[in-house]
Structures are given as C-alpha cells and as structure tokens.
Image (cartoon, rainbow, N blue to C red; front, side, top):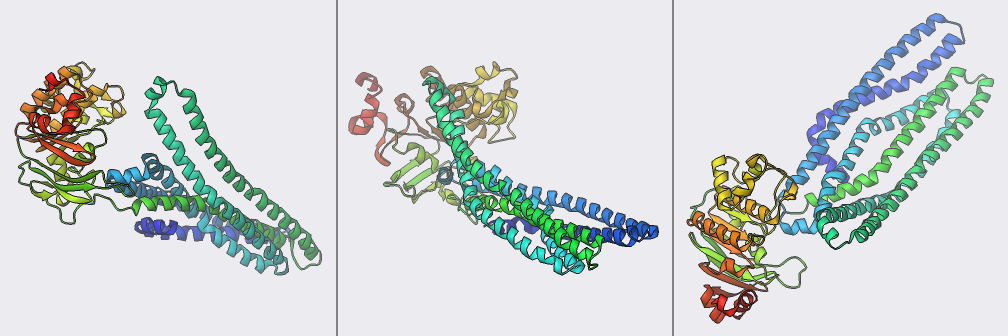
Length: 577
C-alpha cells in the first residue's frame, strides 16, 4: 500500500528524483574515494617522506571533498522539496476526497480519525520519503561500494565483513518484525486520544455542569496511558537498534585490527591500507545502520499509508453526475417520491416510502417525534445523503443529476445545529454568496431579527467570530444561520428546527418577517414547536420514518392521532383549537 501511494504521488516529480539520484551517486562515489586517497597520503607520502606526493594527494582530496559537499547540499535541497510537495499533494487529495463524502462516510471513519489521517498519518509518510531521499538512497551504494573497495585492499581481511553484515541484517529484520504491529497500535491509540480530547473540549460546559471533571480526567488518562504504553514498547524496540549496531561495529573493528596487525607485521598489508580498510568498514556498517533506522520508520509509514488509502479508496456516497445539469427552470418545485434510506448494517430503514411535494410560494412543515427521520429527510434535498430507494427532484430534475454548485445555489439549508466559521460576521453571512453587499447583509440580519445584536458588537459586520460561534448564544447563532440562508437567496429554503433556541416573541417576529421575504420561494420547515408549524400551508407528519398524515392543522387535529398527541403535549385543547 505504501509503494502504491508513493508511486501515485511521486510520479509528477520524476525529474527531480532522477536529479537527486545522480547527486547522491556522485556524493557517494566521492565519499568512497576519500579513504583510498588518505591511504595514499599515509603510505606514499608520510611513510616515504615525499612532501610532493602529500601535497598532490591533499589537493585531490580537497577537490573530492568539495564535490561531496556540493552534491550533498543539492541532494538534501531537492529531497526536502520533493518530500514537502508529496505531503502537500497527499493532504490535499485526502481533504478533497473527504469533502465529497456524505454524512454516512464521515460517520463511518469518525471526525477525529479523519483529522489524524489528514495530518499525522501524512506527516509520517512524508518523513519516510524525506529520510529515504536524503539518506537511504545513498546507503546501498555506500555499502556495496565499500565492500568492493575493501576487497580491493585486502581479500582475506574482508572475511570480517562476511560475518558482520549478515549479523546486522538479521538483527534489524527481527526488530522491524516486532515494531510493525506496534506502529499500527500507536496510530489507533492516537485516534482514541484525539476522539476523547475533542469530546472533552467540545463538551466542556456539560462536563462542568455535571461536575464530571474527575471522571473525564480519568477517562483521558486511560486512553493517554494506553498510547504511552504502546509508544514506550515501540520506542524500546527502536532503542535496541543502536547498541546492537555499535556492538557489531566495535567487535568488527577489533577483529580487523587483530588480523590486520598480523598482516602488516608480515608485510602483506600497509598501514595506510589498514586505516582505509577500517574507514570502509565504518562506512559499510554506518550505511547498514542508516538503512536500519529508516526501516524502523517503514512499518509505521506503511500503517499510515494503509489508513490514507482507506480514505482515498472509499467511494463518495454522493458522487456528482458524469454529465451534470447546469441549468434549471428555477421554479422552486421540490418533489420527493417514495424516498427510503437505510444505513449499512441497520436493522430497519430511517425513511420508508416518503412522498412530499412543495411548490413555489408554499410553506410545508414536517413534524414528528424524536427519531422519526425529519432531519434525515431534509438532508436528502441538498444531497447530504442519497436515498437508497426512490428519488428527490428539484424542478423536475433528480438532485443526483444536478451540478453540486447549482444545487447549492438553488437550495438553502439552515441546519439543526448552526455552525459558524472563524472569521467575521460578514464573512459568515457571505459564505453562500461572496458578492453580497453590506446593504444586503444588514437586510438579511433585520429579517432574521439579528440586526440589533450585531450592531451592538464591536465592529458590527466586521466583528470577530470564534470557531463555531462559541462566544454567542444558541439563539444568536441560529439567527445568523438564518440570515446566511437569506443572503444566499435560494429558490428553496430548508429550515431544520432552526428556531428552537428562540423565545416565542422572537420566533413569531422572525417567522412573520421571513414569510414576507420568502413569499415567492419554496419553504420547508422541520420543527418540534407546534406554534412554528400550525400556520403552514401543509403539514407532513412523520412517525418512524413513514408519512402518517398530511394536511392543515385543523384537518390533522380532527383525524390524525399522531399529530394530535404531539399538539396536546404542548398545548391545551383550547389553545390547539
């Protein structure tokens, strides 16, 4: 999976990778030449007292060193650029694909996991690529070249390498084998830590209201401790690498000196050659150690690549049409025909054979008990979900065939939980129509009964808004969300229990102003409050995902027991009449 991911996202950078490979090859060749030149200075210059030879070989050594430095700098520069570009491209690909997900796919992965996969997992793969391009690429050339150069100096003494290199390889393979499952566990526990931390930060008010600080502290300590234990186990395995390699290196050096001293004493080997042999041994073992360190990164990067590919390979539940419709008659006609929705693995569907028709100028209300599928039904129109049965049509065209940008301009949704983005009030209101003027923004705020409190903010339209509007009340957020939909000026308005946080007086004033603003649009309102829906042109009653009644308030009170129960749970018989 890691190779597949890298092959896909490194393809645009084949030229820089080839250039980097050439630079690494030149740098490695220069590194391998230095011990031989050093040996020549010792044997031909110092031992023979030949100053000219020392100066000649010294200048040559200086030139080779300069080549090595320049090539190394160039290789690192290109390696950093390639790795950074790869990380950027993978993050962008994951983000773009997640944006195409329906709520079903987002719920399947979970928000904390998607955040971790987009950030930490990509970072792990990027780190591996960076280390590979700057270090690992030269390691095999150094190891092979070092062995060849060592054999050229003294074949019998090279027997030490025959023992040292395989021992190192076996040790590294055993450690990597143990680290791989631990790497997967680290990423999974990191997901858990992110999930718990996100819940605790988001639900801080609830935690304090119920005085559950100690419980939440223990809960975080539990998942954090599990991550710590797994990370410690993984780190302990990695810690074995350095002492293992250093032990092999030191024993190999002792063996080279022991056998080399006898060969020097016998005249079969010169001092400079012995020094060069020790240097080549160090280069070989260091290259193996470098490869080993990088191979320790491979298991975790493989796990991260699998998690990234899992996201990228998950098909979007609301994929756009191959040839989308880019123009609509703009009549504001909404029709839901026999719509049904069943989540994968669910025992029963959320919606079953739902029919609904809404025309321009009409106000359609949808009411039902908690869990009856009201929010899900509204989510079918802007394609937050796609129905598993039936179809949803806007102006006679299935929403699945409409261009997503056109659908977003045609349908304005005010969700049950209004969300405001970090920025300003104006920036949030212009989210659906960036070209809206300040006058249009103030008009929308006036309709949404939000003008007075926005004028009271320091900066007015330019007043800062924190993430999700945390510093505002629920009613203020709902009114700004309603104003945002009004600024968009769609043909179809969808209000998903969007007035629940408002007091009755503000609710009534907003609905009155909204009725004038949307008299030529189609309006569908989901609400729990009877006073919000009783004046609708038509009321649709949902119960366990089915339509059990349709009509006006008086008609339903007379002949629909489900609607009557909902009304009488909020109003007296006289008030309902």
